Length: 303
Image (cartoon, rainbow, N blue to C red; front, side, top):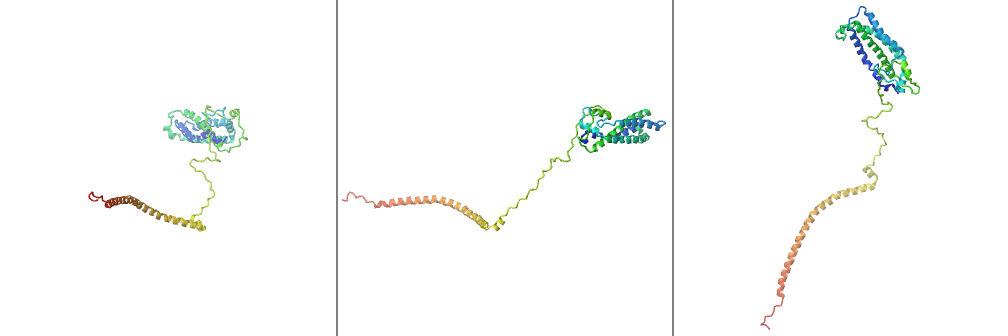
């Protein structure tokens, strides 16, 4: 398992912002009382107790990466990948950081004690003894030594190149307990981090699917080009144009003939009615005129 998936290594990197606050707290504690008659001896004594003694202990057994001093990962339930991570910790890198940290804390403590009188009004230990200030400063120095070694180890593990799993050998639980200093309650269990694979980037929801360019379609020949090449098509186009031109005239004639047919249809019954009337009158007149043609009856006196 790559070391970058372990969340505790990233949590230990938070010491970069915590260490300056701890140095400020040491300065506030030293500002609570005035220096004694021999401040040089006091500073060397507190430096030896608070920095040198923890450094010697951590030299023999470096700090465990899975321990945050108050909380830690359960040792018995660690996976093989976590045990491989403990085996890959470099002892020389952590020991070099330990030596540099211990040597740097002496001049830093010297400067903090000399300038502590400037913030005497803000100290929580005003009007207290010098011994109380020094005794409270010693655990803060030990905490600084622990955090600096943990910080350097975490950075080295995060920057190391992942090795082949078959070549790496995992430590046993007994070996881890004997060679590493691990403190805290064994209740810290954090899930591993998941990072995207740089070789197979996941497509974003807003990204459009890529479309491979296909063969360009051939342009279809236009009607004009076809007409120029084929004389039959030219004659067919001429017939179509003439038919289209004639259709409006025929439609106009049909539109004009429609009302005329309606008018003629209305006039036909009237004409037929008049003709019937004239026929009846002619028949009546003919009957009246035919009455004289009948032979008159002879009168009784003519015989």
